[in-house]
Length: 143
Image (tube, rainbow, N blue to C red; front, top):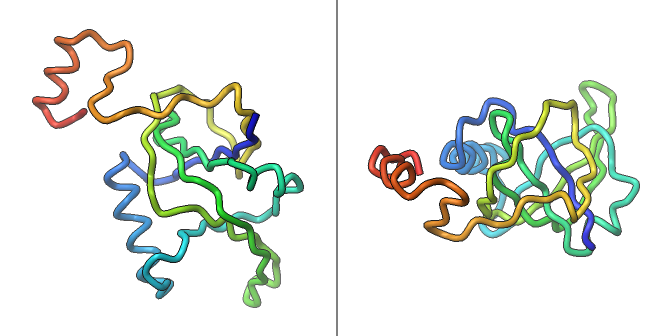
């Protein structure tokens, strides 16, 4: 079973907002088209090899796990201004929606065991929601 990571998406409202924020960060960093998106974190995972064997970074948006991005690598770097090392978590650009799952707040990132991860949500999937509620939420543009 694959090992994953989980991290809070601070300041992100929903998946559309996350896509915009990530695109803006890549543009600001002048990343090449097609290069992986990366996220700063202070500590490099000690179990990096396990994470790169099919693992993903799961994102908590407003207290709920909403999506994931596949992990592609880790790089250590050094911030000269703060005289501190940090890690870049490299992920594929594709954001994969997952079934919503509540999650308590935490700092940094955590390992996320494969048996606890929410399943991917297929397009049009409304989970266990009643059909009438799903139809109304779609009409309002919330689903």
